[in-house]
Length: 603
Ligand SMILES: Nc1nc2c(ncn2[C@@H]2O[C@H](COP(=O)(O)OP(=O)(O)OP(=O)(O)O)[C@@H](O)[C@H]2O)c(=O)[nH]1
Image 1 (cartoon, rainbow, N blue to C red):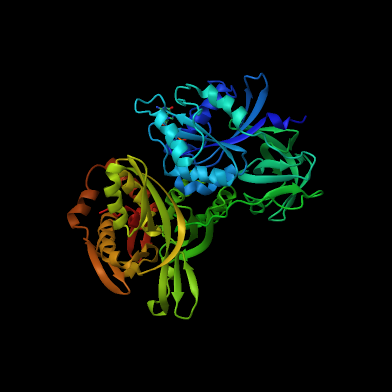
Image 2 (cartoon, rainbow, N blue to C red):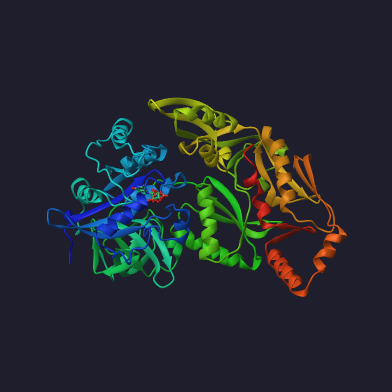
């Protein structure tokens, strides 16, 4: 059974966060009858619990839909979902490589935003045809005419006949379906050529093993074929091929050029599979692999430790499995005096970190202690050596350091004119260097700043939203490294330095951050039978101090009074609490304390 290529459309939906991408995807699936309404769960494409809770799309997902067009023909749509958050540009990029076109969703009330532009540029980089759709026209504040004009002026693509829809109510979604047929090109490729398939995602299933999601660019793949992963050199035999029903894998006989589907093979080692790699036939290989994806490097690092040190091997296995479909996650073993054996992990940004942390806790049932995230600094030593510092504890002695550099990003912030002042003040406070401003129309400006990455990874996004009442949107990319005055801030608890609490900070902010850190830790650390000094120090010199007072006798007495069931409950609670404590010297530190640096207030 071969499928007529001219009847296939492979596309994705791109949008700024919250413009309605997932809602539109659901509506398309519903309209084409792939699912009955009863089967239709809210937000089918966002199939991880976590995504549903946070309302954002993290992993790229794919689904095949059959659409009967007005010309009477049946078309196969392969819809590939993409994430919209700035942390995940890399994931957007890898889904785009599997598509021939992209639907651009723009909110009729918000208009073009920073990530709308960033995503369109990514799509154009991949030579995709971009088809605009104006969403949320049901909102009273919708201004579809203005948004059409904005798309044409700011992005420079034709938008006059863009469907004006409400993904929520389903209004005009049929126009979107028809335009997919008319405007998105059918795939090309020769089914008889040697196999060339691009892996755009992969996951580990405990029954099927590694499942590779791919777009077949050339050739055909069938069960029993010997396959070769070109980058890793791993060979195996295909055990199943198929495509994606809604939330299900549907086996079929073969996948040929132009199709999107999955391959299961007797892949033994999960490390043999790499997203971005090319699969070919081991007996009749293609000459060259497809161009891989843009390689991305993690921007943010932190330590992750199992709360129960016996779970170290479980954490290692879990990280290995997560890495199959999250190639941007990196990790290597490390040890901490305070926390024992764990891993130093690299992430694309803070949201990515939080998501990995939550997936480890939920999907792999691990209880974790995470240390404060930081960026990668370059340390130029007096002996000429340059090291990439991902763990503050490894900072060489100051006498060996010639100078240090920190990563700087070029940021673009889009905001309505009344908030320009507030946003510029914020960027200035975060050591930003002003790089110009353009008015996109009378009321909206695009402000450009170079900002040190370590000033934006924590709470910049929140600060931006609160100072612009939610109107600002933001996108950034790494610009490079710049020389900076940086110091390591150490924390001493009961006179003992706690390695997992050290962090690198801009010299002029050290005093302020040290003071706040001590205040925060004072709140986090429970009283003990003795007094606990908490100190912040730079280069051995104490710059701030707080004290956790000793427990008084009568507090203890209270605990031991009362009826027996209350006492039991209290003991249970204490036991529960104990598990989440770390012993450092003779002080017990709650796990949350290791993340204190994230909770230092904005001002
Ligand atoms: N009024 C109105 N609300 C809509 C419409 N489409 C989507 N929404 C709402 O807008 C919010 C964001 O929609 P999503 O579909 O989750 O947005 P998204 O672009 O997929 O967001 P991410 O997956 O996080 O990138 C949700 O609360 C939707 O209910 C629409 O046509 N009209």
